[in-house]
Image 1 (cartoon, rainbow, N blue to C red):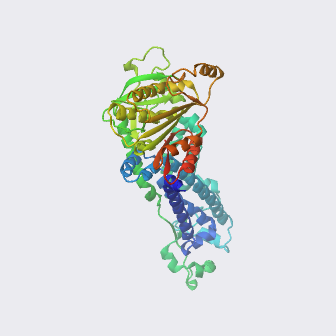
Image 2: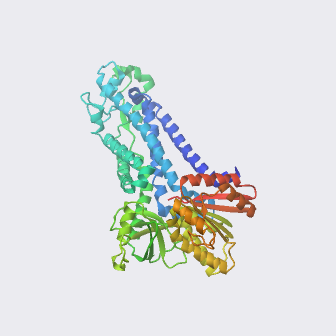
Image 3: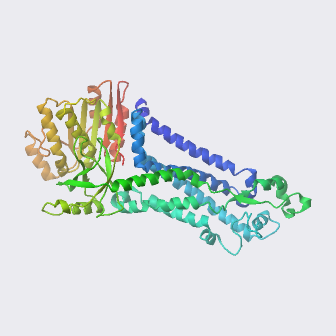
Length: 565
């Protein structure tokens, strides 16, 4: 329980506060439309009125939040500011996309409730016009404002129309349709299967958020939902006058014809601040995109992995950070995130890019990956860089004991960390707080090991030479292999160096027994706080998080961190 609180306590608290505010806003605005001012509106619409207005308030709140988690520069600034005070608080910022998704789901939920309620409202408005009986209060209310068309209550002004026509001929209807269509496209294209297989679809449809917010701001401009004015309540008290509607406006009744008005549009007050912040964010990105970036070296690694080594004036990074890369010759609109694999101590920054989609394939070809001869420097494509941005791995040197777990190309953040370790501990003899690193790499194919094996071989040789083998313990796992590969491994298993990586440490076959690994670390490092860093699939994250909770005790705590971008 203690480790759960350490790992998840603040996240749970933030989510509970967020849910609590949503619940409060819903109940508060639901009750706000049950008061006397809205009595005559409820005569026409019944309980559909508060059911439409309560989720609208929650939509305003969540639309205020939805842009904040994707303001990367703001989050990096906040992370750097609060990291010195609270590592736990800083770690919550690494879950920005998770919170972004939760807010999006809440927006979708309240949008559905809001739409359903308003569909009933339009039917009720239409029914009030169709039942043209002066003995009915609903019809009398619908006829108010026919002369000056200023203080009407029923926005459907004639019985010679239908709700569909009204929907597409009013500001509220048109903006509502635009908002809904944009939201449907954004959410459906964000499904993982589409995002991973057709990233361009996800990327372009996500920019429909511009239409969404424009429609949102103007949605309430026409003030279709109206209540009785404060002045009118002095001359027409619903509890006294609702039964005398046939005599409204006559001196004997003491009940004037009620006057109605809508609330002024208020959504802009909720979303203006975040929209300004996001515009500033985009301005910063545009400025950065125009800074000159020079590709100094291109390396084609096995398993279709492209390494770009680059330089940019004033570029400064920390271990584990990532950047967004744009290649104008491929697409002027698309920016893709890649972890930096270089160390802060190096005079360049690099990224390893696995070729898995249309954009990466086009970049691979632009860099000459499909050609046998080396690409001349002047023929290399221009690239733009936005970043770097912080991740959980920035905290790695804040733990005395560290577990690094990478799966496949997920090893890239740890390349930067291990290189930095090499510079700090081996080359420059600097002392760091971290005393022990356990490195685990799980990979499904032998070719993927090759680009990273050179770094590990260099580290292994240097640590052996300086008698520092106890500092880094690395374990490499091959999770899939072919029959002919297995025969080759058996033949060369007794060789001094591993037949796959060339390291003295032999490759393991299969998957780690995480229970044994955590038990061993617990026994080796009593009274320690162990930082567990993962860049890998959700299934592995779930497994490691459970291990962190089950193996934490009074004297050993495992703190789980996951790369999330």
